[in-house]
Image (cartoon, rainbow over all chains, first blue to last red; front, side):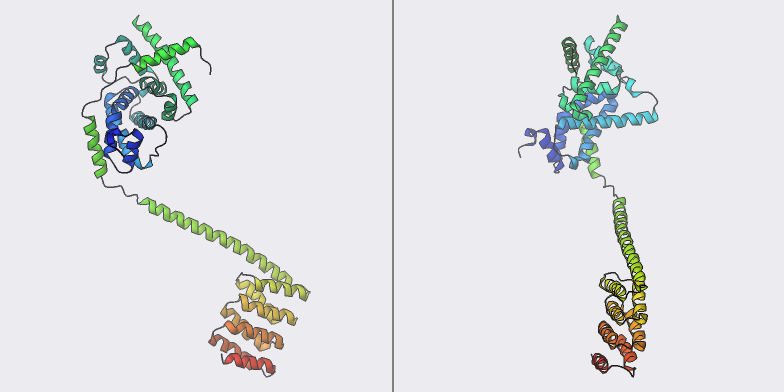
Length: 185
Length: 207
């Protein structure tokens, strides 16, 4: 086996499974940014996303021996991320009656500073107002650019069902974008 | 599902716009924080799952118990059927039927006190010599030492047929010397004992 940096994600995860824990650190370096973006947009909370990214990789560490090496690693990673976020939603529901689907980013001004383009800002706002089911479908397919096969694996459904979910989410976000455009007009 | 091409284009444009969203940059210390948490996780003592051996032991006990219960049920059903068959047959007027039932009980692998009782009863009371011979032989196979000793002792005190005596004598060969001695005393005390049976009993007494 070559140097760690030359290995694929699957090879790194298999190495981690075999006890080579440096491989997990490298997987963190490779994927934590996109996971962070996904989770921050999915949960609407950047602080929570920081915790969740770590939790995702801790789960990889904890359950590394159950990794089979089948299928796309990225799809598997996003599936874990989705489960971690779902657990977080459940905990928040237990203590906080506010619907997390409509919870805005906790630091809108910070986000606003990052988003310079007005169009992007509208999309960000539209995303935040969508139900989590639509949001995650759009984030996986649109923002992360996963192929439908991987979107399906991450969502735990068939490829056909994933296409339908993305399509419905697109219809929903377009409706929201129109409404937002009406608000600003 | 079919799509309107214009709608499809619009979908692609929306997806492209989503792909163009600014990447959200995580804090620079996130990797270090994860490393610390991972190290803490690895350093933490493994939570001992004490309940796993307990559950396995319980499952083992349940499995063994279920297997035992199943065997017992099966054995009980067979014993009940054999007892019923033997009781019915021994009340039958046909000696051939009684003989057949006793041979069946003698060749069975079932060891049951009630079956031994019925065979002993046949040995002591059946009017047909052949049936008593069969009972003597069957008891040699299915009765435990104590039951066989008692049955033989009682039979030798009253049995007049040298055939039955000879077969019963053979059946008692597997008894311990003490038990066999107890049985032979009862047999040799008979004044009307057939000389051949007496000789066989004497030979056994010297074993």
